[in-house]
Structures are given as C-alpha cells and as structure tokens.
Image (cartoon, rainbow, N blue to C red; front, side):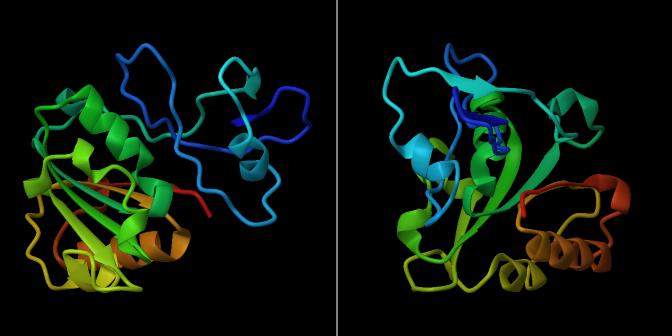
Length: 180
C-alpha cells in the first residue's frame, strides 16, 4: 500500500525492484482522475511516502516448485511482480506473455531476455502478436507441469485460468494476483 505521507488514501502496488536491490521501486500507471497515481506523479527525490505491507499471497522462490518451468502472464502494470522475480532470479526458466493496448506501454522489456518475452498488443501492430494475451495463449502448447503466474485485470485472469486448465494445467499450478 502506497500513498502520500499526509494523505488519507493509499493504493496497492506490486514491487517492481529486485529483492536484493538497494531501493524499493513500484510501477505506477497514471490514471486520469486517479486519487493516488496523480499525486505520485509529482513525488520528488527526498519526498516521504506512506507505505504498508507487503500484503497478498503472490510470493516467489523458484526452489518452492518441483518443475522449474514458469509462465508469467501479465496485462499492463501487472508486469511488476515478474520484473521483480526475474531481477531477483536472473537464471529462471521462464516465458513472459505481456499484454498492452499499444507497444509503447511495454514497460522496460529490455530488462527481460528478449527470447523469453511475447508482447501482445490489442490496439496496434507493434507487438510480437496482434491481439490479447488470451488469443495468443489459446493458440499455444503449454506443458501441464508449468507453473503459471497471472497478474492483471480480473477478466484476463479468469479467461487465462480457463484456457490453462483446458490445456491440462492443474489448478494447483496456477497462481494469480488480481489488481482490478
């Protein structure tokens, strides 16, 4: 939970920085009329913020999983925890599917292994795949032993959950963090 020091409201954000970084970084998308994102846009170095947490169940340590194959599916700023995972564990065997409307919303894809990322764009043709992440995943073969992490809007998570289970991925291998 993050917000202005003297404010009464906070919003949930996922950690973007790595576990061993000497700083805490979050990815904030400015929302027109947003109560928190507009205020965070004007934060300057040295300003104090109010922070609580972490909260949630989206925890990741590769040794917790018998299979070392990971699929990360994100929409928009839902890429944040996956950026943190890869920054903390750079040798991961992962595949990232990231959906945005326009390619310029891809949020630092250079921090990921280019061979392991598929950018899905629904509003232009600048991505690796033109369409939603659900359209892309529907056409892909997925090993049922893969551990699948989903972060983004609830509609995407429900659709991807159904796609993955239809492809034989057990419910116990699907982990999600919904942000709206």
